[in-house]
Image (spheres, one colour):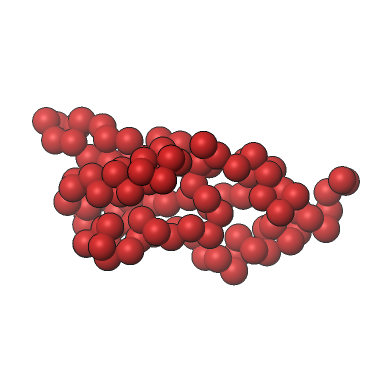
Length: 101
C-alpha cells in the first residue's frame, strides 16, 4: 500500500524514506516487521555474507513524515533515520506553488 499523492504532490516527488546505518544495524528485522504489519512494505530482508539484514526495498511506500521505525522500541540501536522534516516541507511547498493543477 502506498500513497500516490500527498497534499497534491505526487509521492514520487517527495524524497521521504528511511536510511539504514549498517554500522549500527544489528539485523534484528524489527523495522521490517513494524512496517509490514502496517501494510506498507518499505523494508525487506536481504541475505548478504550469510547474514540477513534489512534493506529499504520500496522507499516511496513510506508514509510522508512517519518516523515509527525510528522509535527505540522498533530499532533499539538507532540505525534508522529520515530526512529533515523542514527540508521535505519546503520541497512540498515549492512543488505546490510551482505545479499546474
